[in-house]
Length: 204
Length: 348
Image 1 (cartoon, rainbow over the protein chains, first blue to last red):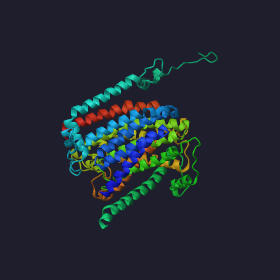
Image 2 (tube, chains in turn red, green):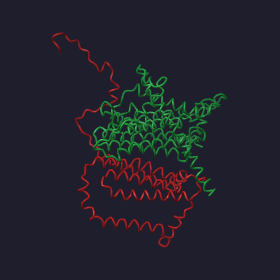
Image 3 (cartoon, each protein chain N blue to C red):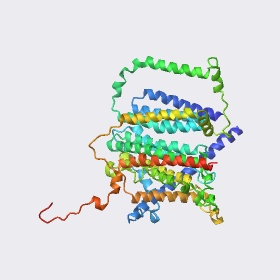
Image 4 (tube, each protein chain N blue to C red):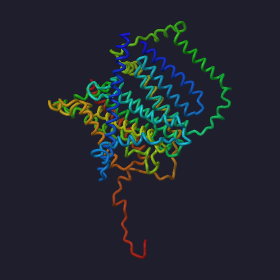
């Protein structure tokens, strides 16, 4: 277990330290890179608890897709961040409030036996031994049997959001030459080329 | 103290030794694969290729290595130094880290983990960071354009690669790479009464997915005809423009390690990994790793020939191919395969 503890403190320390760096880094691109480090270490923490599937999904979804978009946006935006940061301290109370709410919620969840009797049961949900039940299969069972409708609804909501984003940003501009590959492929020498006999000295 | 040694130190030492051995073999293999790439390219164009260093130019890659290491690395004045030097490191570490789970033979993986294929997919989806960081940190126009192109391209083709992998996993029923190979011991060939042979492997039963995976693999690793991130006719060398000496070598190394990974993945998913092509005593006697390497080299020969004979795509055509052809095709095949497996009960 000693190794387990060492790795836990390593991942946790790097995660917290880079989370601080996300907020305090001067360069926004560095902030996003530190954010990626936070995700990476959280994936390590997931691995330590035996949630291998969640760890890999965190890597694929958050680092492989979401953070790439973040990085894109931050790199493309041309913002003077020194100017942007000037009034940042006046938002400190709001930030503190949000932090307080999150902390309170976390405490309620972890120690929430008195407030909600069911919470203790879901915390103490017995986890099957990894040797007999892999958590990929266990997650699949739960998602596609007990919660299949919720799962499908979540998928539909994402689909709607995606279509909405496309509809909002799609501009079909007129008067532009577009390539029609089917028509291009269907062209033959007969339809594509016109052979003209040109008399010398006269032209067309 | 004795138990501490036997529970922690000894397994750790074995793991380090195993990893080092894999790494060294992989790097030497990549050195010769690089040469093979240039030789194939040269032969298609009726040139000789590298033929000066050693017999048939066999040691060309090692001469290049010396040259890369002995030259001075130049960091552009406007570059973001830390990120500029971090980018090649990130690329190399990620590209080599994926090899930890590749089973080269029955039980020959550094780490035989249950979510092996997801691990590979996760780590290779991170490889785009090396490119973006390199392009951004160079603080120059061409590298940045190359990085943007590359990121968009890699993200697009990851989608169809992911769906192809899911289709294969449906047929296997496990995320473990060794189980994927075991599952190919029986297949279409044994179903019609033939003995175990190369007809059982997934390439035949999932042939359209095999083709989609191969082409997406070309695009994912920025290989020609999809090498737009470093299209020398437009972008000089894309995101690598500002790099020189050892950092440049590391970018190249990570690129080739990623190519070898796609070749190994094609071998495992579709070509039966270390399984011999026929069930025959002489062929069964050949160790599995030989079959694995032969298959990897065959897939790489396909990559090299594609580089030599196919002209480069235009960028909008590349995106069209990824999103409008491969994505619907692989999604459709996923649905068909799922239905077939469910209705026939082959999934087990």
